[in-house]
Image (cartoon, rainbow, N blue to C red; front, side):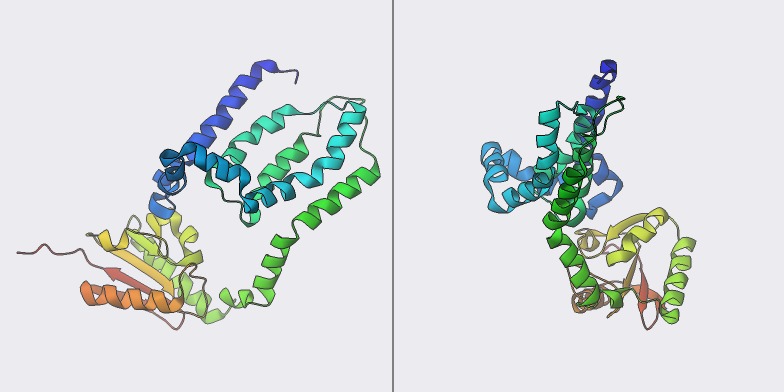
Length: 279
C-alpha cells in the first residue's frame, strides 16, 4: 500500500507467471501436460463462448462459491470497520487465479494458493489496526472446513477405503527393487525415460522424463529410451490401469529390440534400443 513503486513490478511478475506457465513449463516438462494445446485451444476457437462457459458452468460456479463463501464474514467485518485491505496479496494471487480460470481446472489442492491470497487480503503491516473478533475468525474457519469437505472426503476415502495405502507399501523387496532401478537409471543419466505414475517426478533430475500414462511420444520415439513401471498392485498408474500398461509394454517389446535391466516382483525396467532404418 505504501510502496506504490513496487506495484507495477509485482503486477508484471504475476502476469509473466501466468504467461510462462502455458509455455515455459511445457518446455521443461516436455509433453507431461500440453497446457497451451489442451487448455488454450477452446479460447482460441471461440473466446466469448469459453468465457461464458467459465462464468456460467454450474460446476465452476460451485467452485467459486466454495472458494469465496468462507471469507464473507471477514469481508463484512472489514467493511464495517473500514479495515485496510492488502491489495498487494490480491495482485500476487492474480496469476494463479487466471491459470485456474483459463484452464477451468479446480481439482483437489488447486484452490489452496488462491485461498491463501484471500486470507492475505486481511493481513496488514500497519500498526494499531483492529483485529477481527473471535466469533468472526471461528466462523471463517468453520466455513473453510465445511466448504472443503468434498476434498477431505476424497483423500480420506481414497487413502483408507480404496486401497490407497497399498499403492506405496514400505515392503522391503519393493523398496530394494526401486533403489536398484534408480541406480541403473543414474548410470544412464541423460537418457530418455518413460516412467509410470508416481515414479515420474522422482526421476526428473536424471534426464528427459515423460509420464508413461499420458505421454504421446513413446510411439514416436526413434532413439533409445528407458521404461520403468510397477507391475501392480503397487503403484498408481492413473489414468490407466496396470493391465493396460502391461499390454502396452508387451506390444512395444514385440516391435523393438530391448533388454530387461530389472524384472522384479514389483518393478520392471526395460531399455529399448534405437529403431534401425529400413534398408
